[in-house]
Image (cartoon, rainbow, N blue to C red; front, side, top):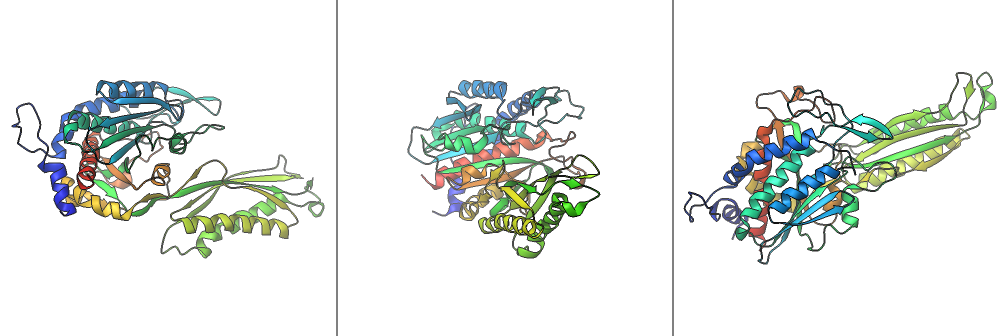
Length: 436
């Protein structure tokens, strides 16, 4: 049987519901998502109003676990500090499909005039800060809860198991702590039962509601943070010949790092970024200091490019420092170290007809790769997976006017949540039907 025919069976030809619908009457993934749309909106508003920072999502995880237990699911808490995992067992043989949502918020003060706007405070870097779901993780929680409710109500139509993963600390664990997808994988979230495939969604504020975006292969960049400490020799600013100037050395390193992308990488294949985001050194105008510290980030979209950039950063920093009589201490990675978020092309090709049939071909948008990063990539290192975008922008809005992620004005049109639920349901049913 063809993939297309199996897709048809999975999402629109074999599910019959209760209530006033005849048992033999099929219903689509769209109709299934309609069943829980109001629940999803209410969940989203609750989590939006009560955001919590990475590794501190205590009330969030407690509420998620409560909702999942009410669905009759087997629930485990405390994974990677505050993560929640639930398993739905159909009682029949088949694949294990994992669905993931991230649950943490950001240290951002909300400026939207909403009845459920966040007034929450939290602790970040030992400071009290306002907290907001400024990247849409509240919608991710709600959409996954909606999919869990529908699938648990109709588990007789499943083959295999579904693992619902609610992941903390996607935005990065606090200093000195582990967290996020990497820690969940270390603690065995992809085992017992062993996951065969994983699907994840991210709401986008600049993609119109009702649409899904996708890209086979590298879709979000690998990220490596780095620190370079330039060691020189201190001297009076009036007598620079007595110094080994780490400021001038650091300036040359910064400029040279920019040529890695512009002169060493084949940019017609993939994009890349080398950014120095912080320079610290010196205390007075007339003192040349001993040290200067550079901190920055590297972004790449394939393993070969990533390795080249890492090696080039070391080569340039070491050689420039040596030419100036200075030395460097390089820490790479320094903090964040995420692989490329990679959509398995064969899996994407298998699932694409389902998405186009459910939403209409015009609503399934091929996107370009982005240099943002996602720790969903750690799950994709274990099993094939897809990470797709969900539209959250009001219809008719110019995408250039849409409030950006991680800003106080970040806004999501709740009319797009049903599309996310529909997509999670459809992907699960189709994959199970095609791989039973």
